[in-house]
Length: 358
Image (tube, rainbow, N blue to C red; front, top):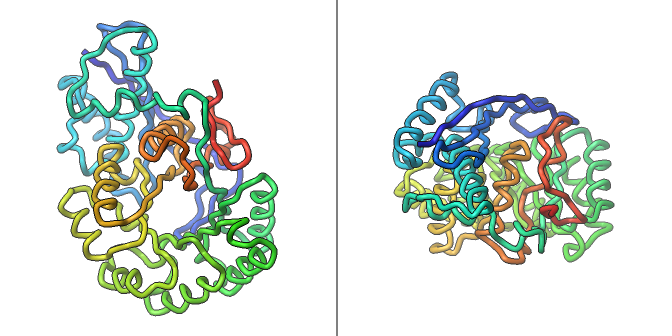
């Protein structure tokens, strides 16, 4: 018989985190601690974290729903995936709690009965990355700010040894952002520094193509979500005609049913999709996205969604299982240093790689 205790915590950003949607200064998360009467001393921890105005499950009644789902899981002894598809952050928190519980039991040589649909959680932490033997290549992240702030943050990331940098764009004047990108390319070739940009839906549909053409002059790896989501015909046209690869992110939020995922990919036909377990269906939902995307020749990578180190740790282990060993394509997992009061976890960035410290 499982028992799930729920706690909550608010984290504070070291610097305001700016996107074209707005600015984050705090981050609220719920934490699930999973135990079992049958295995005293064994526990697993998971994080349920929604982003206000973005997550499909960020609703006023979230805390009540979380409690109800946890009670259901306690009674059923498993994650009822089909019943909670509309709650990706709860799905991911439960998956992480069970995965870390199974891992803790395994380390104590204790056997656990695992439902068939949860077998992929058993060895989540068992990989060369999980053993501290190899790191995961990650990108440096430059948040929006004034031109001077963004330039300083960019220099900081390059000095730290990052070879892939992602710039948040779409809030300050586009031509100033373009000038910033030009300054990078004046000094660094695309072989030296891979540039990704993330508009967070900040471009207007009528201007998007000309902005993509302007960006394409500077050897950009990809642009995330150039226009707001839910404009499938326009996004499909952009993906057909774009001079640089387009990666969907916000577009995937709320698309939780397999047939809808197929429809989205077949209609829009993006070059990439970016997966955030807390937003896109947990591990179960992201596995579905990756399978459907790969069948259609669509690339993918995984990023965090500003979780604390509890969620980030699980996402990093998941990325290592999905794309490893030797994850070379930079993943978006460098967010653990954003908070003044993050939860300590054995994660460490060395150069442009994330490692588990053993």
